[in-house]
Length: 391
Image (cartoon, rainbow, N blue to C red; front, side, top):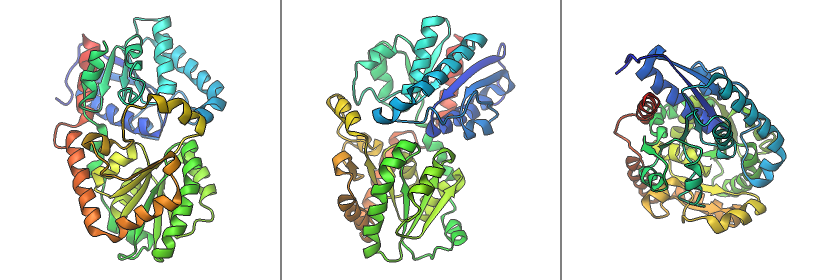
């Protein structure tokens, strides 16, 4: 279907608010180009990945890539300013659709503002908030300012339909990155890491608030591991807007540490490492696709947790565990996000080959449920979007 002709050129506005959304946006852009060729013009807000696909972003993501009440509140004026910029731009050009990607604290404000000021502009949510996991009443509210949800998970589409919001299951775009997860031995050689050295992939998140909260915990965890694994080496992929903060927090790292920039090195690090220590988020699904055994952690401020906890309706934070209905990947969240608890779990994965193999089987089973082996999710999402705007 490459180059399929359309009746008239389309203008689509894509808006993301953080690096994970930027990656998803770039893959959606590739899918749109494959199906519509030059018959679609894409504008909006994105980061480096979307800019590589030709987007000229209205502004950078620095102001919007935050999470947690304590972290968001000081940035509210900047976020609201960016909301106004994006909203005014959409109202000025009246695109065929505005696709809001992830980052609901930011993107949903734009959707609400657009529906208030010009209800004719169609709004699409790509990567909806996990309202099925907490505060399910939000699904009904979303139906007031979104016209379509492109769902990543198989059970999401019927959930939103039950709440009056049209939804299409597109599949999880992260599975398209599986082919890029290669080059582990080459990365080890380039960094001078011995073939036999135990390597830990450290992934503290893509937001400044996350790395600030988690890197001190990870540092102490590594210090404890070093006592049992004296040859331990760490690799830490960084995204540009948090790189300075990461360097600051890892200045006195207790083991040899390699900071990696760029997606190719990030994916290669998944194949170079033996175990990963990761913040909960999209990266855990990437690790699952790479088949890298992991320990997952997360921590937010006490006030954010106090307000959120009564509304949480799922038992697990990691998508693999949610899909499988069991804790196949060990989780250390909030009060359990402590070095003295995390370090023994990481050490066990390094030392116990049977435990690693058991987790790898679970990771494979979960990724099959996300659509591995089917048509590329970016193409499915692009096709659903094009059909929607043409109706």
